Length: 167
Image (cartoon, rainbow, N blue to C red; front, side, top):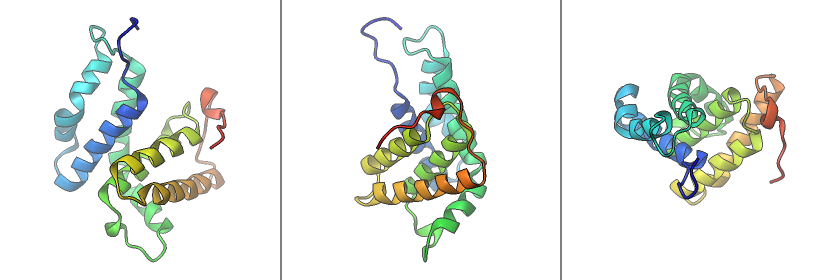
């Protein structure tokens, strides 16, 4: 990467994917249409060698996070519903749902990303883009789901993903 050229951060990618999943949830448009209208420009900046922000790993992260979260939406909805005490899934804000589902997908499918990084990122995104109390809600729900996934041996981490960070 050339000096002085700003790299696209993983947080920026997560935020853009959250916006796309939110659009998907509220519009009922096909996933490919949402990808094209919201994510394609960023994806191409990350994917094309002629781009200043070229990074195949981040392009893969963006695409897998978006499509994987959508593909697993129904199963993730069941997991989330089971964590909601006296609360219906339909009452959970769309932004919060998108953020929680993305967090679940990231914990399960990106072995190189530490759990604490995922929890911190999605809690911060909820704080920035949702309601005043959403960050605490998202953090609590994702933490409970994280512990459930650990009990079920569903989380496999490798390399940097094995690192534990203090909160």
